[in-house]
Length: 286
Image (cartoon, rainbow, N blue to C red; front, side, top):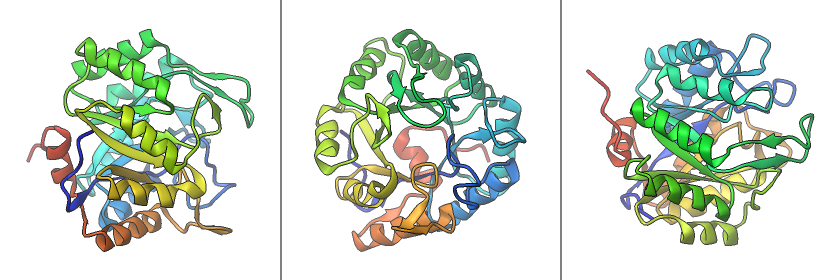
């Protein structure tokens, strides 16, 4: 694993996600203006990357590149956050719909590294399908467009597909792996320190690691990740509470808390341009 500079942390904020609704928390942004404003507020608090899930006008996940493009434009009019789109989409989207967001040309995009089974909610019993052939095809599409994959790893077995992409030269160094922990899927691992340390042990030597943890585990595991020299992800996609029984007021509130903790650890949040250099992304055109 490549550790970040000792005095830096790269913070991603996932402002919306596929499953959180206004009924669960009014703070979740759904439409382009809301998402762009939430992203800008998080940028002001110290986020360097925004992980984007688009919604249609009814608030359902969409892979429509026009919607992603609108979100990109509205964010870029406000700030220089790194734009990272989701190819995970939502359970209502087909494989073809999920990957359409690449047409909007984000700087980064998620690349889920294996198939999982949904075990709760309206889509319980359905697969979150990510076959080796699809993973390879999507990695090729990202490489052609100079989009850096954010490889989402939910369990140890998914490192096999990470290594396959490395062996076939489908991804560029430094590799970027997001450890997604605590998801209620069959095939995912719990969000615990023991699992975090174990997953890091299996990470490729030339990979930068980001840590995402769901629910109450978000705060302790992202704090632990900062100590270990990893990047972190916070936001309402993964956790809608600030503390037990208290909904977070905004995505920015969660970012601000992580920045306070980082500073207590002697770290400053990387700016988007600093993060681009660390991650091997091109600088924004002036």
